[in-house]
Image (cartoon, rainbow, N blue to C red; front, side, top):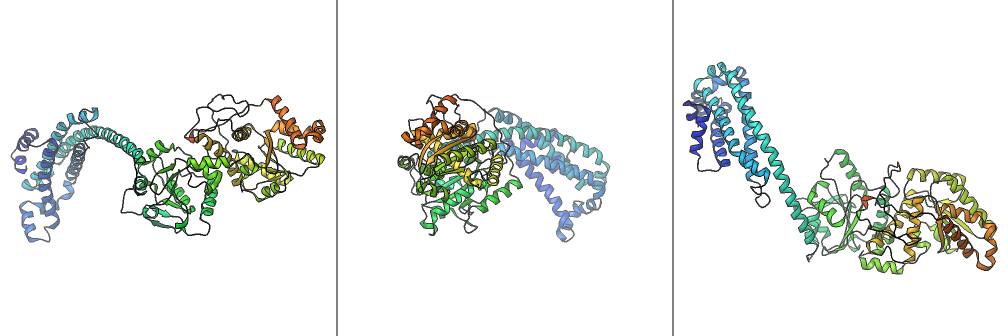
Length: 613
């Protein structure tokens, strides 16, 4: 190459001669061979420049190449060397781009694909101009080492312009090919992801001897790292700790609420009792999902670390080890959007439940192993009673139940209604000489207005109320989970009276104020705020029925008359983040199919009592 550059002739003629020399090779190979020949000469020049002062043989060779003289005049030659370095950098970048086209997997990209076809047509031109650039660089170096620094200094401006002109041409071609390469990479990525998603689904249809293959696919196939963080010991561990264990995959973003974590931690701790870890029925592993299209920031990492360190169970050590194809496959298979889900895998990796979160909220660890059969069994054992609604959340209410007291559960955030309701209810109880207790359970959203209501009820001593909004969140989450459980079992719209009552309560919550009357464990009736405040206010109108009907039936019959006359609408809200939204819903009052609307809602809370379903 050096000889061809020194013997004269324009760059085009020299390029054709070099093409003739490497004529039997593909375009990428022609370029690499030519670049390698230049690298040998150029590398030798800089090697001599670095070691000639300390090596006698190198000094002799350097003198022959006029290296010492050139190095003594680096200042005037600097513009020329700068232009040379920039051109070499452009040549290397274009060469890498051409090689990357060659390395694209042929099973995912074909020559007739538009971007690939365009690149194939451009590559010969790209190779030609890259070799022209190499020839220009080689000529510059050969001129310096053969004719001396005076030649280099005298022609610096003209030669720098020549180098820059070719560099601009190469950069233009590189920019075009880079865009085509990005398109090709996107096509390859999409096809790989489609293939992975298909294999991901097939993986759960295959019988395995243990759960390791599935966990490695979900979390990471790498064996050189410890991918889990043990929340109990605060140390990293291998996936082996989960081998042949029942595993609950807690899949969520980085925005799980304090309420969710607090209640789930209580259930998790209760499942362990005072025993050792290996005796527990299941392990929980947090799978943090981060949008792969969003850049992961330091603020996001701080949020992740904060959540990870709060959790007593296992967590993925860092979100980055979860492949983006896995993230999308999780969305495909388990309908994950933003709301946390709990996927249950048995010791062989079989999927027992696509989302057991609602079962966990309703029954806790007693729902283990969280299968649909277990869910149906638990529902068959349930009845419409106050314990179903309040579970073991509050010992005070359980004591009222044991004492067979009358109990009003009420909710909403209208302070005027709350004052009027509690006053009239207490007056009714005094007149009827019945033991009555009342408890405020808030709303499923509007957290700030609920806090204000709690403060007012406490200061004015209107009734008993939960001071901890986490209990209110849990109450409404369990109630919504009951509805979602039936939806998942495809039994939400049968003639089950219990489900009609659950839907009725949820609808009342969305509509405003409401109340539910119980006697001990037995739920007598429930309704909207307007009718539930009017019934005790009209006590004098229906108290005459008490001697024959009893208080319970007299209250219910009068309220039912008001309820029918009020003709209040029923409504449910299913945020898009729910993932699965029922196609239809029957009214709990008249049992007709309800109309479907699209709504936009903002309650101005930083975090709602219930995160969106």
